[in-house]
Image (cartoon, rainbow, N blue to C red; front, side):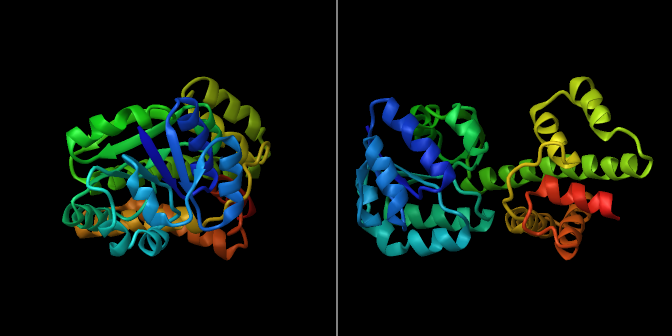
Length: 285
């Protein structure tokens, strides 16, 4: 099976070694050449034109956002694709764009799956990604062995947009947990209590789960996660808010999280990872 990977940021670059290790023919394309050269050194084949990626049986795209997807995956690119190609979009794009892409792929006569994933680069390197997949069941079955080389597949629907809504909902749950821990750290800090001891109590007992264990020390400042900026979580929460509004749903908790992120930016924490930013903002108030 031949596989092309479009986009070699931290996620795409973490996926390629798993594909190569499974003995697959892997082709790579990226807008900047340095990442391509690093993957070629591992055994991947470089592509100079993104259209050539769609000669593969499976195309994995790992692009940053809606704008990047629109810029790279044009109608011209899709129209030049091989009829047997299946495109799996791993990006966290808007549900509306996922729906639009599904229609564009159908018009071009090629398969399309939405498959945004949960997992930082280190999780992907450990084959521990969790991948939300939605689309035609036969296409899911075809792509499953490829996806399971770096994570676990969770089918969440048969319409592409459903996977992107699910990913945004998951990100909201993570953000809500981070925001709650941040508020608690602010309260405990004001009372001059041992915040790290309290978080250890919670994460070893009532909230013994990866999200709380991974983010608690970052929220308190004991082990801050690397700076990644608030632009991405704000973008994701805005996309989810648009879905909520479209369906005339009450999103009070989502509104509160969006307000907290905006306030963190106003307080000068916009460059930090959201657990660091919300934690510092809560303790500064």
